[in-house]
Length: 509
Image 1 (tube, rainbow, N blue to C red):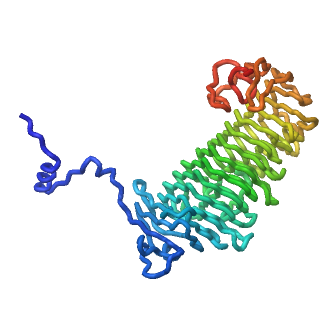
Image 2: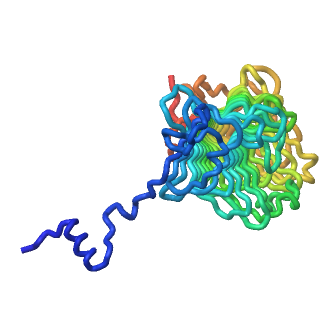
Image 3: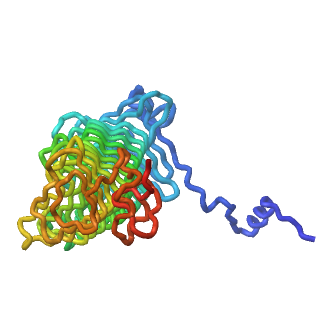
């Protein structure tokens, strides 16, 4: 006869033997942590950080060290002024959380009031920053940020989640430096110990009215052969040490003086489901919607980018110097003064393995594609759809190479639909021998460059970027290996000759 040993009996037996037995959930249990409250509208009497007696200043919040599971909560409807710069770290099982509390209709608000940073998370890790309103408008033109993550000779920092923030009116200067002026700035500094982020999620934030950058990365540990002379080795002396596990997603960015998002010194980053609406609006420098610099294996997908304000860059996407294996796919680009895509090595840098596929572009100009001088190797632009009506690009490809002797380009443009409902435009500037076309559809465009396998008949492009019944672009493209597996609309790509353009389905009536 078997006897059942209860949990209580087992505990008693093991206690008598001087042993301990973990319960089924003991190993997974996270530290409970402590909760601290900040209400900057409250009277500063007996402030202890409790719910009944909250702290009333950022100085009080900054003076306390935090640990795993701790929560620092700000009262909804109250405004705190200055810089929030907490110390301490969370853990993988129990992050340190900074968020809001209360039932007020308005957000908890942090106002930097002209400080360099409204929120500074320095040499820490496992931090979640959520649901706050952040602004920094005083003393406009000076260097400042809304939120800055900073590592200085720290090593690896893990476990960041920046979500649900409303960041607006960050009135900084026109800086592209290690410190910079941004809504969200990811900074790696120092020279003694290589530092990087591993696990950084920036999602579901709203960013508006920022001078200059939306989301901006910079690292002093970024030196490698690919970058050439683009960076001063005295300012960026560390060997290339990329941040990993980076995802930037479901953010909305509006009214930006300069860039929407710039990734720098990352590997394997994913930028997806973001909306950038209005960039390059108030900056004399060159800026783009979403771009990479000195990165490996970046995927930029399912984004909508529009409102590039001028032609000093001013295009949606850019694989810049030392960008390697960058993929732009399933994006919607429209109404950008600068155009659709920039590929831009210079000063001895290289840009390798850029792919732009299954994107759609409407009314982008002054050029659809622009190349800088320098080696542009292994570039594939295929199965995109370009439709221009209100704005006609001056150039289909604007190649800014000084001469073929100083530039090596490998740029294949295949299976794309180009439709114009205007006149003129679509010229070529300095086309280099490495530029090739095949199996494209050109309609309403005077095309003199050889385009083997291409068509010039009406592809019957619909307003929704799909193809109409009887389109000559159906099953008329060249087979491309490793094509991503689906079209702009999410339909699976089938074996055999694909459609020309971003739509892979049957012709629609």
